[in-house]
Structure formats: structure tokens, C-alpha cells
Length: 71
Image 1: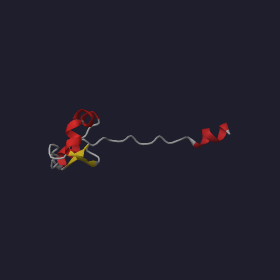
Image 2 (image 1 turned 180 degrees about the vertical axis):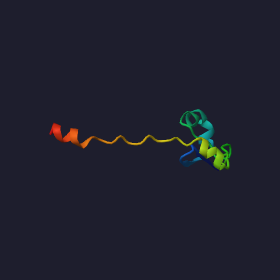
Image 3 (image 1 turned 180 degrees about the horizontal axis):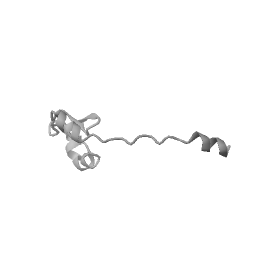
Image 4 (image 1 turned 90 degrees about the vertical axis):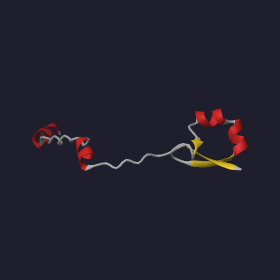
């Protein structure tokens, strides 16, 4: 019997007896059975997104006259 393990990025398949013998090793490396990991999907509204938007600063214009004088 096989068991599927995931760390959030990838899924591996191991024998159940091998997993049970080495549970500490897998948990240390971040692998848990797929059945126990449940993803929560939240629907966001436009208000939530608008409050988290970061305004970027405009780029500073270089003074062309100063840069030509240095060369």
C-alpha cells in the first residue's frame, strides 16, 4: 500500500510501512500525507485588493547636462 506525501510544492509516493517507520524524517523535511493537508481558498473582493496595493515611487530623472560635463 502506498501513501502520497506533499510539502506544498511536490508530491512523492512512498510505501506506507516505510513512511510509518520514518515519520520523524519526513516531518523534519516538511512532508505530510496529502489527506491531512487541506488548502483553504479564499475569494477576495476589490476592496481587499485595493487596500494592499503599494504605490510605487516615480523614477528620478537624471540631469543630462551634469553627466556630460563629467565625461
